[in-house]
Amino acid sequence: MFIGDWKENTARLIELEEADDSVVEAMLRFMYYFDYNNIHGVSTRIFNAQVYSFADKYMIPALKDLAEKEFQAAITTGWAMDDFPLAAAEVYNSTPEDDRGLRDLAGEVAGESIKRLLQDEQFRNLLRENL
Image 1 (tube, rainbow, N blue to C red):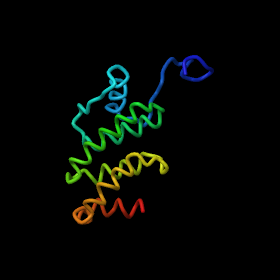
Image 2: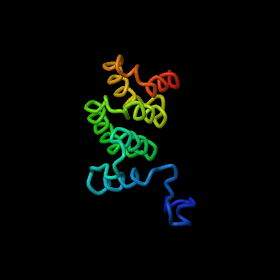
Image 3: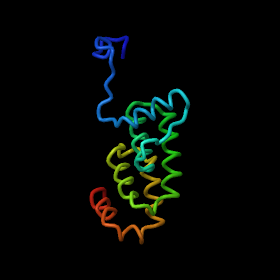
């Protein structure tokens, strides 16, 4: 971006619009340490989905792989938490339809716990919006 005939070369600035500061911070930490943390206290499941989406958008495959692993660990152990429907909605709203990485993980967990999840209005709304 700083070499070609791009606005970033002239301005010497790259704006990452639509990205939460904590997600950009996670990306920068990953670039230096090959790891990242959720230090801002947001839902771990939602945060990892956001990092995954960001890594996909900016073509950082190693970060995307790590975010997928972190999301899987968080969603497997915390599916019963109130934020599961929000995390699943984040996955379906922020990833391309043909990217099955997080979508399949959310689907597997939902399938295993469908009876309990169907009692949650947010989850039912997610199903209505995405099926």
